[in-house]
Each structure stands twice: as C-alpha cells, then as structure tokens.
Length: 290
Image (cartoon, rainbow, N blue to C red; front, side):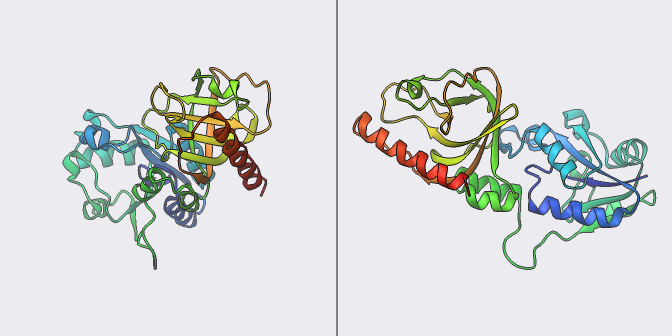
C-alpha cells in the first residue's frame, strides 16, 4: 500500500519538493515511494540530445529521502523498458512491484512504448487513484531542471541555488593536475570523473570543498588557466581556504558552488595573477563565513 510519485527528479529542485510535500499530505499513514529512472530517458530515446545531470543518482536518492520519500525505486531505463506497453508498465511496475494505491504525476506525464500512455489512460485504471498535479506556478516561471541547467551553464549559480534550495554540486575524484597551484602557494584539488554532470561556466567561484567528513570553504576555478601556456583542457579545481598539507589524491570529493566571483582572465604574468587570487580568496572567505 503506497503513494507512488513518478518523475526523473533531476536536481530534486523546488518544484519537485512541492510535489513531494503535496504527496505527503495525501499519504496519511501510507508510505511514499518516489519512482525515478536511470539513466535519463532522453539518453535512450535521443542520446545526442541527452541533458547533463544536476545530480548524480546517489545524490538524487538521498535528496528524495530528505524531501519526504520513504523509499526510492530506481527503474533502469533501458531500450527493453522503453518498449514496455503502457498496460504492462501499470501492471508490472505500479501494481505488482510498488503496490500503488495512489499515483501522483504531473500534467505532462507519459509512459509506455512511444509515450502511448498519458494521464487520461492512467486515470482509467481502477487499481489505484491517480492524482495529477498542476505544476504551473501562480506567478513567475516554472521551476524546471532545464531552466536550472541553463542558469548553471551560464554561471548563474546563485539563482540556481535559489531554485534548488541548496548549492549546485559536482561529485568526482581528486586527480593529478598541473600541480602549478602547489608551486605558487594555492594547492588545489583537481576534480575528475565528472562525465554527464552539469559544469558551470568558466570563471572563479566561492563555495565549499568536501572530502570525507571535512567540508572546507573554498575558492573554485573552472577553465583552462589562460595565463599559462600548454594547459591541457578545461579543469575544475578548488582551493580549500587556509588549509595546508592536504593529500587528497584519489579520494572522492564534492565541490559546491555558492557565488560567482568573476570571469576567467588572462594575466600578464604571475604577480598580477597572485594579487587577484589573494583578492578572490579574501572574498570567498568573506562569503562562506556568512
């Protein structure tokens, strides 16, 4: 016996949270199951148009549980699953596996092979009650993963933070970089393994670096370090403010983006770069202490 809320839930943003809050009011004593999909359905239907992700799967599950889901069911989205008829999806997934008594979806929900199922066909089922939520806000723009993704790609991490209700984050592994930061007094953790995640625009940011149980205020740089020649590709690196002697290589790390400080600039040598980096760190220190 469960209330099943269906969606990709990428980002578990303010709009998703509202859906889960409303499901909580409907559920009473019943448990809430958030049914999500991995990978993103578009990566199966149209791989060339697949969006980058706001949250990796483990973060999405954790956030769904924080925002009222008692359980999270992850459906592997494969070509075989995509070929399932709408009737089979309802029977095998919603009724037999999840034992749904109420199903909560948005107005544009479709399901089954070639999206043949919609809210009308779902409502026709008597095995459970179907609740269709109007996700249009009374005023302002719709909060959507697409909108937030565009903000992040443009570098507007503050507006994205407002819509997510938390800082946007990247999860990866600390890898070896150019080691130039260590040489000039700003040793950075260079984040690798970021495939499919939404990386903000090139620039300098203030935020946090988390490794294990430690979460440090940080100055974050994204870009190709144009002041130096020969840099290999785009890098995402974070300097944990005022920390010395850290050895973070090969460890899992998270970078959270609080504020954008400036664009990436090319400096005429090391001295003006160091002068600006000192200002960046001072501003990052000030913002993260708020």
